[in-house]
Image (cartoon, one colour):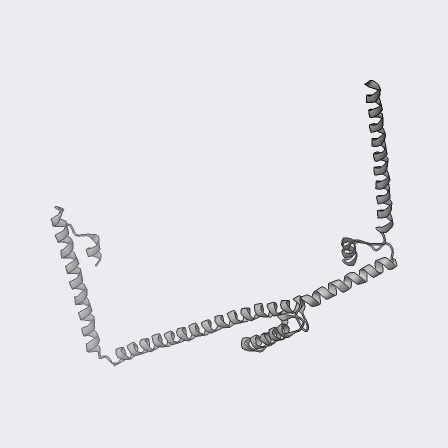
Length: 220
């Protein structure tokens, strides 16, 4: 039994040694492959750093130059796709909001009429629709503001007219009429004070308080 066990352990150790050697060889082959191909195929991050000037250009190889040209072409195509054919949507503008909306509707119609329909055409149409909504909202705000301005102007005219009419009535009144109006106003004030004083006294007597003159009536 001990001989069989020893033989089995020996085979296991031998198998494990073979697997370890295979793993080591595979790791070395992977590293050699990476070291050979990495300089020839720069990553996208490396290209971005190089184009932005954040990384110094070490060696100008044909592979690196081709990769840079391809990346620049991709960036240029991305910008064109976002803007769509022709001028950018956000730069479209007419002399009036109505004219701007008309131009944007033409751009949207043209983008949707293109065949075959591409994501770029749909993006242009969506951008035009968004700009149209912005212009329509601005147009609505302008109309509301204009209506409010007209209301305020008319209100101010009505106030000025009323003040003018009152001043004209005062100018045409004789001194006798003005004096009578002043006396009537004083009599009305004294009557209101008397009523208020009587009501106050009645209120005090109802609750058993003494009749004392409040400071309010002394001032009045």
